[in-house]
Length: 298
Image 1 (cartoon, rainbow, N blue to C red):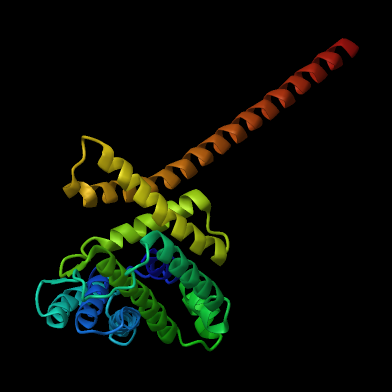
Image 2 (image 1 turned 45 degrees about the vertical axis):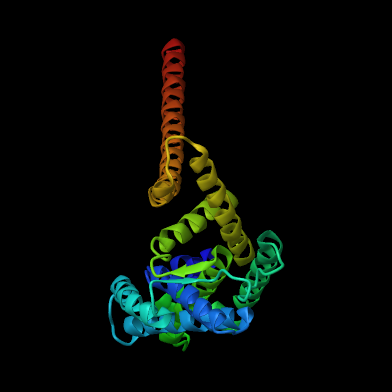
């Protein structure tokens, strides 16, 4: 999910709120298919496709419908609530039972998911090195420039938003299978969690290259979960405070780099001012010494 948010938030610079609903879409599609006897891996692929379709519609609303990016995501998020309810048929679908098989049946989460994450990360790194991937990255950096080279930026935007929401929906399908249920409200606040993972990862590990950026996002999501775990161990926080803790983490991660940059600029300005004053004082002292010598010689 964090990698999906990274694509829209960092690469495309697109504020996509579809994430909160496409996460539930992936969970709902996977839950319905699995309970009807479909292979859990095929259900995951179907969830990815459903999320990608939702993202593509958001992209179409923005590029072809000329709707503001933030508003198009909000509209799609609202519409998907009803769509998700139609898909699931009820607010909650259980995936518990001996007759239900998931991708985690007989396999531990901490064994399977690192493999899945590494595969997705490597595939994304390879994709971003292709011509299409480079066009996608360039669209976010300088849309006018890449359009002058003949690239259809509408297509790259739609593709990027679709890929992002496909990954988010895939994440939802895994979470539903791991937790044993799919709920209509389970995607609320997911965009903030994704942003927290991206921002923390970039702040701690940097993002100078695509490989390093995607790695930072993955590690940032792990650090985020560690912070949440430590917060839960405190007597001050309760289980219902998850969204509040996440919001505070994002605020700190956003504000701290700006404050750090401001402090560095102030220190540099103070050093330059001090150096300039020293230079002026030195020149004044040299001038005074020269005047004294001239008077003595006279």
